[in-house]
Length: 317
Ligand SMILES: NC(=O)c1ccc[n+]([C@@H]2O[C@H](COP(=O)([O-])OP(=O)(O)OC[C@H]3O[C@@H](n4cnc5c(N)ncnc54)[C@H](O)[C@@H]3O)[C@@H](O)[C@H]2O)c1
Image (tube, rainbow, N blue to C red; front, top):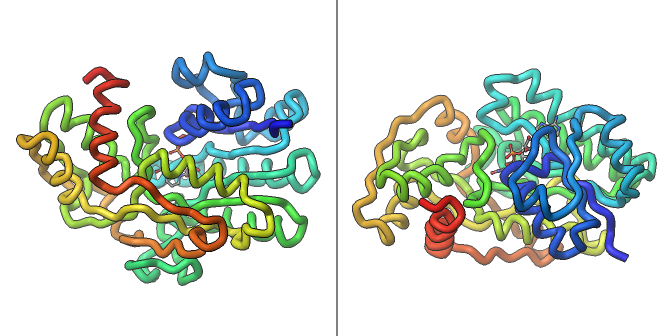
């Protein structure tokens, strides 16, 4: 029998595509989406949807009981750029929601948890190139601090209470179906929309700021394959490094110019530059590749072709 899955924060950039992928795999009725707001037409009409607040334990527990949930994917969070503006709100949302889900698993009301971490767990004292799985972690953003604390709690609940929690440190994720939700890598999505709409883009990061990134299809595949891996293969219970591409605004613009030769880019760095400067430029994900056979599929040129045709189709630009 297929597992019954609850996705919290299902209407966001990742949740939307994750919900659709899991519905396709497990059957629409077995994947319950919830969020504090409604999502796009496809998500709302393809299976069960509930309004619920991730910081309200009773609301989440009620859904777990009502739908006899086995697994929870917790995608609700406040992202890096927004959390710098609302630090206490960011901290409370990111931590309270995680504790609720970990406690449901500790009490055996659910059996498996996916919780995403981020490259934001690293900081300026971390080795910047090919950042190892285990290394110095002194994050300097509210978001990074919440993700690092979250990782420690995931590992603690696994070791102390046997909770089957699995996690990935996502790099910046790039997709065309849903817009990003207030992160430092959002430029790499906006740039494609603006290239098609206006032929020009002003980047809020400097031209040579290199960051680890990934096309959404790869991220969704990684997430589902980590969750499907036999428990004994999942050796890291804090969070796995995961890598696909690294690029700068300048190299991304060049790859767009292969399709739109007249495209122009200018640079006007804002407060997000300091956040980006504190993060790695590339990630060593050999643990994920060895433990559960992770392999990315999309390189920069394939992603650019997919983004431009996807935006044209979905947003009719
Ligand atoms: N997108 C990325 O590039 C990226 C990179 C690294 C890590 N992550 C992590 O992945 C997860 C999902 O990110 P995303 O990009 O989809 O974020 P997003 O902001 O696009 O989506 C988050 C969703 O959570 C919902 N939400 C907010 N508060 C809620 C609450 N109290 N109760 C229920 N739902 C609530 C929002 O309405 C939104 O639909 C987050 O934990 C994020 O930190 C994302």
